[in-house]
Image (cartoon, rainbow, N blue to C red):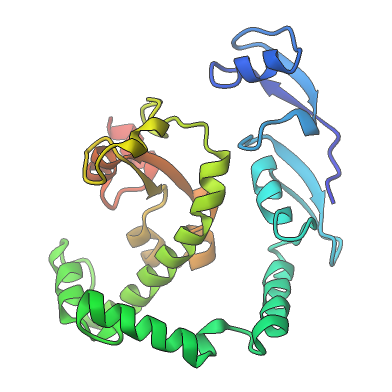
Length: 245
């Protein structure tokens, strides 16, 4: 449940037209007090919410609240894992198991895909994957390779699940240099200006710092940037990368 009724925002160049179209008389860098329902879907404004299951009070970005209620119209908190429980119940009702990975149909599909892409049924079996990780600076020992490969795979799978919501709420600007790049999806996929998803806290650092796969792949840790910038950033966290620019 959404508790906050109004929020104060500072109008910047990205949203000034949006609020003018709503009838507000405002200019760049002015403050406005607006009803929560007038915020755009990608708003980072912090709102107070109450879990519809356990009643836990949280303060989260408005866009995160919208992403969660998109599931079935209710807000489920992360603290007590109410959202995870809801998803598991829904999966049990639909498939009869808590996790679809337990279904032979899904297992056979994953094996077929891995065979086509990597030549093995399980990506953990791919020596090529291990070599690529080892060659990137030698930051992992042999004992950690399998753990990192598993972590990386889960993060990327969860990230892809969030891509649709990201696109719906994205204002079209590159996170790092504020260039409008939404139309760049018309370019060739390999073009340096093609938009791609970046993890603000990198997958490498997320693994080393013990950050859960759910948090690292959450929309709050994702952004769109050009392929060229993502290549330059590599395994840096976004704050370190911005500081170097």
